[in-house]
Length: 220
Image 1 (tube, rainbow, N blue to C red):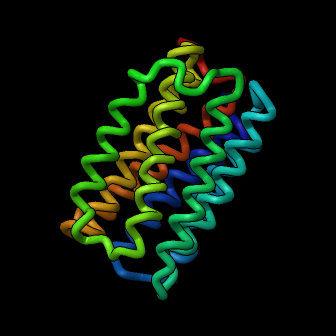
Image 2: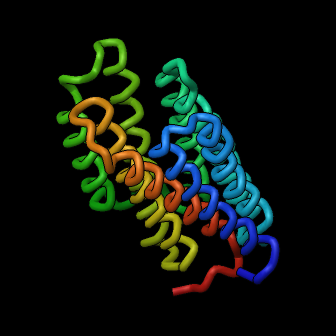
């Protein structure tokens, strides 16, 4: 990645993400309202300014980041809009599945899928007692879709063996970690470090997926 606008956007996204996490712990809602969506929007701008290896992949990732920004906004509003946020991130993951499936068969090797579906099953079992009946269906659908997304990212890395594919696979894995921590904190057992873990892994995931757009990412 050349030094220039993409580098500025990437560094800015990291700094704004730090400020957003800090604002959460300082309990300053106005700062959260500014910094949280801004961090994801900067990552979106990064994805759009990188020279793409494949334009369709770039646009699929960009679409995922747009819906992720919507999810950020829904989940940070004072009035709980969890289902709207969940739906936004569900669509974001479908965009990522589209990106990770370009030129790569889906479910060509089911061995890559087992770990993520197993992890999703464990998290679902842990949070099940804390879920309202109306949320159980949407949450199960979400767990399946994010598991497919992360599994397909791993499948793509195995098929292509490139640095960009590795970045996407690691990013997808971090997304699973982020959502798992969020789910346990919200529906099983709250803990103070959860917000930092959730947001740090979330933005690291989005940043790596955005970087995977680049045609100039170092190969393996």
